Length: 271
Length: 271
View 1: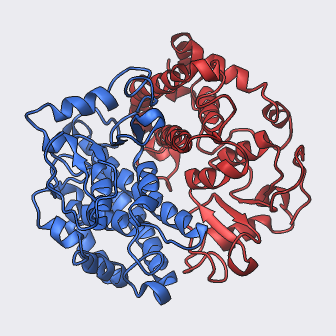
View 2: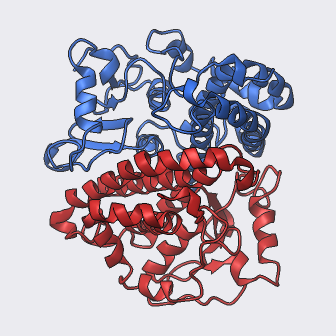
């Protein structure tokens, strides 16, 4: 594996986690990266760290094949990246390989200290918020690909204009209202800084990433929505300064948006 | 609460679970219903069982509001149904209310005996399969509503024709291939009857429901795909005979498809 450049703030009591995802874009891998980064726990971003050494080949071999296993039979097949590989965590010292972004976050939540420690229900609150943020993530993806994910944007631009209008005008405010009300529900313990409890969880990082992505995709729209959802965007601004996040955002590990889920097509934004 | 009509095969050691969902359609509530039914654990389907007594009003009060809580402050707001209410399971004897279909299934999995008992990784395998089936569920929904969920099908029929073609020709086979390979991965212990382990899990019921829904929505397409994915549709046919499922499918609790997620518009099917 490639040399790891992540911060190692905590004592290394973790397995050598591996993120398996496409290189060069934040994408759905970003939700997993943010969890590691805010926790200060090292991970190998296989495709990005080992560009010349075949990192992406490893991702493709494990996550993008037509096999009946993701490896040697130990783990089941993967529908699509991202996946998390945890060497030594499975039976007989083998690796565990799991996929689906919210599933990966659920697996890591307790291990990285990104769920409330007390009360089982807190874990389910965190997961339901993350799942909802990931639903918004998918809806925003569909603004530029409403018809077919394998076709070019230019081939579905007419439909994209209609879809983007609906997502901006109806769906985004519905989600933002929900996230803000969650913040308000937790205000007494979270002080407006956290969605669940009094410490950062992967609900915070996941909602933050979607807010960041839609701010990139629809700058005009979000500029207007900022006035409507002041508490939520205060949370968004504050989280950029959080330990772990601030250093990450300033690092080369934070990849720029380009042709992934969040794309800036000015014609799809509020005019 | 309304009288419960569900089978009570096992000793009642469960709380009085409540499913909060829209009345009259299978929808996303069906994934939760199937889990209870196959486990033989009673639950109250609030909106369907208490039609005259305001069951749906209860659902709306808890899950479809603009409040900063889903109840009295104990539980956070809900983005949309389905939700699960578990009286007495929260702090100080209060109820726990959680939402998001895969999150509800995760909560119920261990409690209803619908995840593998040994090995933590089995739970994550089950969840990743359920999440993937629910992704297909969403994609199929979008075949009749590719532009705007709040508009009529007739207003987006032209786009729906294009979307449905892509979902039928590219997405459905990709998902079916994955589910069949999962079945093959588990063949040695599951004997072609279960996706993970040697007992039924909520991965099985969730994949089954999506297969059932797409068979209703696209009968021509699925008739053809049956030949391509023989093992998967054998699993589908066999599961209808499983204890708990068979009785449920013959009962009045199993609602017919109509204007929900799975709709049969002949023009969207293979011609």
